[in-house]
Image 1 (cartoon, helix red, strand yellow):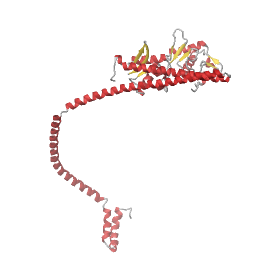
Image 2 (tube, chains in turn brown, cyan):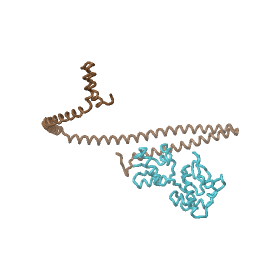
Image 3 (cartoon, helix red, strand yellow):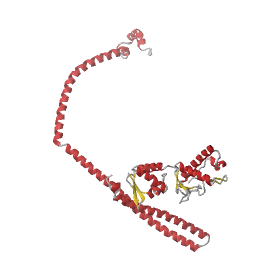
Image 4 (cartoon, chains in turn purple, brown):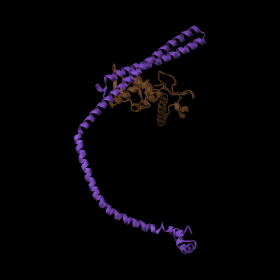
Amino acid sequence: MGNSGSKGLSEQDKAILQLKMQRDNLHKAQTRINLVIEKENQVARQLLRNGQKERAKLALRKKRYQESLIKQVFGQMDTLEQLISTIEFKLIEKDVLYGLQEGNKVLGQLNNEMSLDKVDKILDESDEAIRYQEEITDLLGTRMNQADETAVEEELEALERETAKTVILPDVPTVRVGVEDDKEKRNKEKEDKPLQTQKTPVAA
Amino acid sequence: MSSFEFPSIYNFPPFFTKQPNNSVWKSQLQQWTTLVLDYCKHYRIWRLSTTGTPIVEDTTGVPTDSLFTNSKIDRHLKPEVCQEIIASLVDQGRAQWIDKTAQKSILVLWYSISEWSDLLLNWVDSTGQRGVVLTLYEIQHGNLTLSEEFHSIDETTLAQALELLEKKGKVLMMKENKNVVGVKFI
């Protein structure tokens, strides 16, 4: 953290400690007063039961007074707590500011290392390199294309061979059906039947 | 606070008599020490007299009679046996004499000093309080520690746990009139 002092403890730390101790004292006072209020309440009840009205009244008056005290204690505690929180938060802000400063410094240094001329030059160089690379790709590309072309042809043939064996053939009879009249179709069907049963056993 | 659930052996009359057989006594002693620790942990009794009565400022919810006496079965341990059990706790490092020469009462350590220091450190880390100044009172009685096991921890025990942390360089002590009143975890 940004705040340091002797043995890692700063003046602020000591001040906060003092404030917190005051708050603790109020906390203790509050517990004590609460106890007194409770006791006076009990006493008043007891006295009333014994028929000592005046003394019960006195006890209640004492209780009232303690209650007003505890309100003050609460108020003071609140003020102290606020002050402590504010100080602690300011310390954090201080650290944040310190961080920002350091960050700015580094950013400045980095910017100095990247002068515009340098960047221009590097960009130019990389432009050239890119163009060179593109030329190479083009050259290689045309050659590669020829090789690719033959490969594609071969692959196409292979595919054709493969499909001819299986999938497309069953379509053939339906095409013929559209063209020929019924008689011929029936005749043809006789011829086709053995063929069809061979190919699509399920349909037959 | 819910009342402590005693183990069934607590209602077994011979449990309150020192058994003559040495190995039996050893296991009996072991059961007694465990019972004392569990009992004190349950009621958060930090100081216990050798007669088995808790030494507390605020008596709400804490039993005032000795745990070495079971009125239900009308049995109690003899004072010298109580003393022996307490001494055994001290030997095991589960308690410390408050006054070594008098040997009248102990600080009960159901967690060891080093375990307490770990608990403190975990709490500081999990609540993001490193670098924050804390008073000892705040650690003991603050609202932030209400649900922590070390809430209302005995002053001496807390001081020892903090000293251990100081040796490890985890905490800075803040003194006033030579008394440690606050700490800053780093």
